[in-house]
Amino acid sequence: MDPFQLTRALIDIESISGNEGAVGEFLLRELKSLGFSTTKMPVDEAANRFNVLATIPDAPPPTVVFSTHIDTVPPFIPSSEDENRIYGRGACDTKGIIAAMVGAALRLKEEKAAVGMLFVVGEERDSLGARTANASTLMLPRPKYLINGEPTENKVAIASKGALRLEITARGKMAHSAYPHLGESAVEKLLEALQRLKAVELPLDPEVGPTTVNIGVIEGGRAPNIVPDFAKAQLLYRTVGPVEKLKQDLKDAVGDLAEVVCVLDLPFMRLRTFEGLPTFVAAYTTDIPALNSWGQPILFGPGSIHLAHTTGEYIDKQQLLDAIEIYYAMAKKLLAS
Image 1 (cartoon, one colour):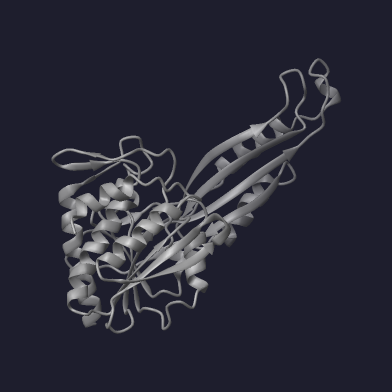
Image 2 (cartoon, helix red, strand yellow; image 1 turned 60 degrees about the horizontal axis):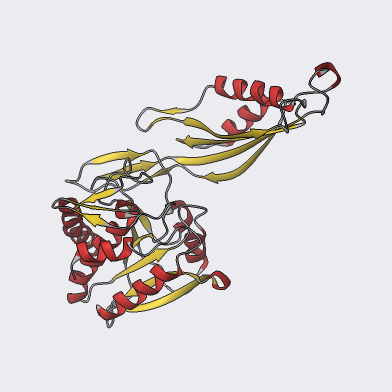
């Protein structure tokens, strides 16, 4: 298997979240041709969405599973390459990682190692594939270790921040803008609520760093000459510990200005490290919280998160090759333990 060729083949199959069927079918065929046993794990049959599970024939049940996601963010960007890099949507997040995992698994297959692979849909949207895998009975007993792939620059994450997404909805009363005293501006309420939220002291972990917040979406109003009766904002907090107190602090800060609804709450995770490998803190969230029945998690992969979701996304070829070696050595060490 040529990992660069596989990476480009995967990139050139558009697989934006919700449309992963074609790349899933390609992986099933490719992995089968490489000698793995493959299984479809249905996620949404009406939309042809499924996870791909691969194991080594005549090997013991997997103790170690390599896992990452096969979906990407939009827009689709076809592959290209130069001497040192492979470019395109998903190059580092995470189609190059898939190629590295397959490369390591091929070496382990020759040894009939207790290793498997799980490639899931939907990570970029709602982790639906991971949550489906967590409830599935297609692999029992569960593995002891889960090596989850995200672009970490071939460093091991000591922790990954949680994600707390809030919707803040303010309501008012419409009126003619020439007579604002006859109405009640939902936009002004929302702006005041956001100012209060920005003033809330956020938790800090001395080792991991601060909780951060991004006000990602603001919408509301009907026309410049109408006092707005509706306004909404979406905020995403990257958390570094338990969030129950933070949720209450945020609701208390907003008070009766607006309604605060939590629409996503993924926990902060402390993760296993490996001797001899550099470490870092992942300021982002992964599928790991949704795969908590799949063994002790390790977060590692080639590529930089700073390039993911950008128009210039790429993966360094040498880093991809290095990752194959590290994934192999990591699995061997875990199996020996």
